[in-house]
Length: 397
Ligand code: 3PG
Ligand code: MG
Image 1: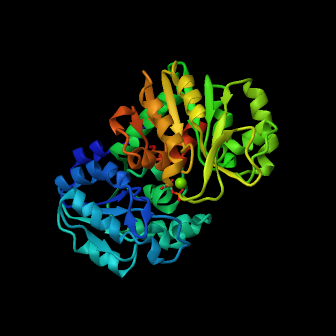
Image 2: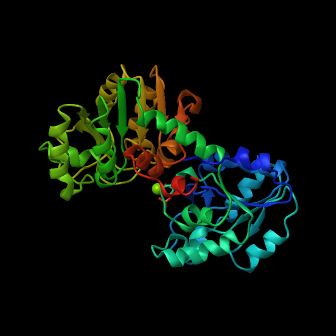
Image 3: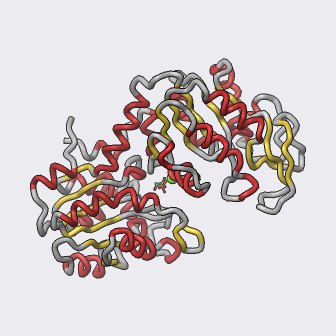
């Protein structure tokens, strides 16, 4: 099975050709302002090389999870502005995806011009589970272009029209970002140099269960922080107060802990707060003594030290998910401390995921101190689980 690449398309020649680029421009927004433009920057080389080669470039993406109808909260308009600034040239923005505005915008493109169409998920066909509904939307999208490039690594795990069905309708190619991401993750699923240590955070065990199952036989240690650690602490018999808890996952966690035979490492102290707020009162308490009226919002300093020590002998590290509510300043220390410990590892380190990657930048950490920062959270986890990713499968010939 082979995958044709952007270089193959450029070698064919794209002068004057309409090329549809599926990007993942699903950036974090706060009150309509982009708080981290990493995903926009990551796809620039692909857009630039097509534009420089004279293609008429049509960029499409989703943003957030609108429900199949236009929703001003999720417009890509500000992303179009940022994309234009970063590219150093104006971007034509269509205020629909396959309607009149999109068709007129595409018709107005000259060689080298770049357009961004409105959020794909304003159309129910993008995410429909019904093949025919998705297919009908894919027909319209594909009708706008003559070739398709997928550089939306963060969305390759989604069986969506723009990811899965459009490539079946157009000559299709993988962009540089998708290729680089897959190359890096393949190192982790192959024979990673040991010790191989995985650091997992984020709020839910249920989201991470499949990847924990897949990784447990392969890793030397699994360090668990973030909201999900409380379900594990409960499984160890500790009370967790008002902390995030998935009660129905406690038995599963107990079983994982027993099978892991000491290789799952949990926090030993937590920042326990009176409420979920930046100005809440809080104290660091032992992980086995969280007061009943408190909720844990970060791992504590002893846990950071414990995790840093565990990372000492690592030669390969994969990190997904913040250690605490890093968006609230008092609860960013755990994520910062563990991230800093990862940068000191003498080996190959991968940051997987939209949130963790955004955390690295939001905390002002040196991005170049990590081996690779993935643009895909769910996508990188599903790759590590060994799942077939619809967006990658669709690119194969
Ligand atoms: C992400 O942010 O994980 C990707 O953009 C995919 O978004 P989704 O989880 O809403 O499909
Ligand atoms: Mg996601």
